[in-house]
Length: 121
Image 1: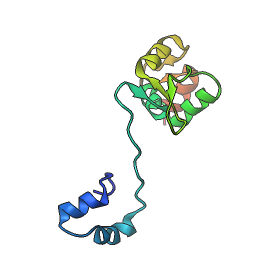
Image 2 (image 1 turned 90 degrees about the vertical axis):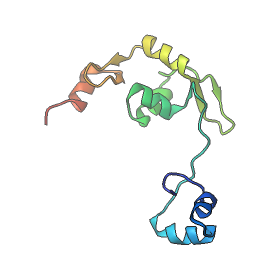
Image 3 (image 1 turned 180 degrees about the horizontal axis):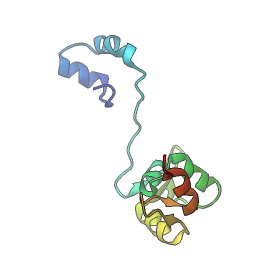
Image 4 (image 1 turned 135 degrees about the horizontal axis):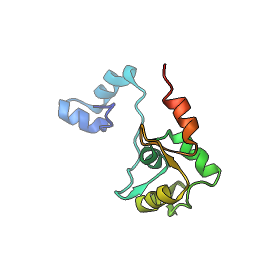
């Protein structure tokens, strides 16, 4: 339950034990990272764009650094850029990316993508 992100207090209540006991019993299986708040439906961050494009997150970070992504629709209080999904969907059709016919990934260079990702073993 800790790996799934359940709070220690909730696990303790469900197990009829103390939070200290849950912490002690699960400490060796950690680390357990806290999950931040999730974005509302229709809003995506860098990781969401990566999922939409079917590319790794570092690729989207590089696209942002190189000015390939559209300007963020706004920035969160933690200074993270976020976009409306409609902004990204429009960008996918007009941003000059190619779509891989094999896996559906949106990429800058289709021949390079195919050579790296779909080469025979």
